[in-house]
Image 1 (spheres, protein in one colour):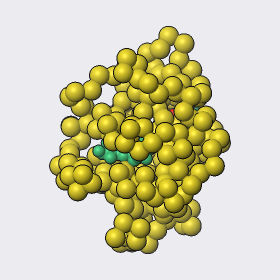
Image 2 (image 1 turned 90 degrees about the vertical axis):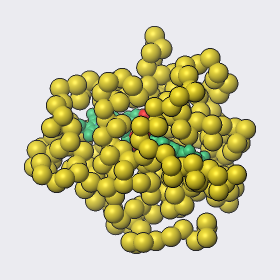
Image 3 (image 1 turned 120 degrees about the horizontal axis):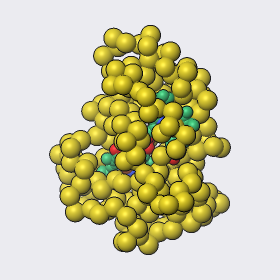
Image 4 (image 1 turned 180 degrees about the vertical axis):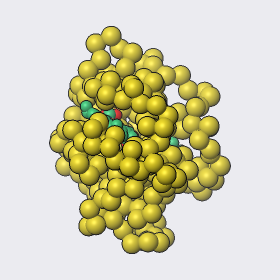
Length: 251
Ligand code: HEC
Ligand code: HEC
């Protein structure tokens, strides 16, 4: 089963992310968790349900490792994702952000038809598994060599970043665990572009409405420039792994 999943993951392309047999919306949703864009009274990170449950549990890192075996098929054993942006890097991401995103995906408040069937309670367990796998991901060091843009417009990227992003993602792209603001530095450029475009267009349904507003005037050139700059920002050295590191937990 694991090998099959890995073969499936390798064969995926970014266009497959659109998903065929997956209907968005709350119908099939048995997991309680917040709301999403499209709900009349959407409030970002209203939490509740599985997210709050997972946040209050004591995490078991060893069980988190076992849960992560499923995730490793796509996000790789190191949690480093892929340069083409198909699968994001998870290593280094804040615990609260991992828990929120996973709970949102499981509750269909963030559409992810590729991952959804593998991330359900029937596959990995309930809120405890969410807490455990988030804790295991904290043990992984970040990719020292993320995918970047073409590097041709970095001065514009820096200016746009400083004027539009620091108030939430921080001066160096670290985000904020307590506020559920994601770490974005060192993430693969192609993944950043996809998320950014989806956020701007209202397609990422768990987005922060203040960010959506903030980026409405961004042209294609602005988008590429700012995200190229973000992908090249250096995370703190203590969070970054050595080149070519392989996770011994999955040998
Ligand atoms: C079949 C492939 C697949 C599997 C298995 C998988 N994921 Fe994912 N995951 C994805 C894809 C694809 C995305 C990005 C979707 C998008 O573009 O919005 C993603 C996104 C995420 C995100 C959001 C990251 C961010 O920066 O916002 C988290 C968190 C995540 N996955 C955690 C997990 C965990 C934990 C597991 C194991 C329980 C797992 N995934 C298993 C494919 C997978
Ligand atoms: C008002 C606060 C705010 C501002 C300003 C803001 N963001 Fe965000 N951003 C967020 C939050 C919160 C999320 C996560 C939303 C969620 O819960 O899914 C996010 C998500 C993202 C993501 C997706 C990350 C992932 O791992 O999936 C990217 C990329 C991003 N922001 C880039 C930017 C850039 C670049 C700027 C500046 C041009 C910016 N943001 C401005 C709050 C903000």
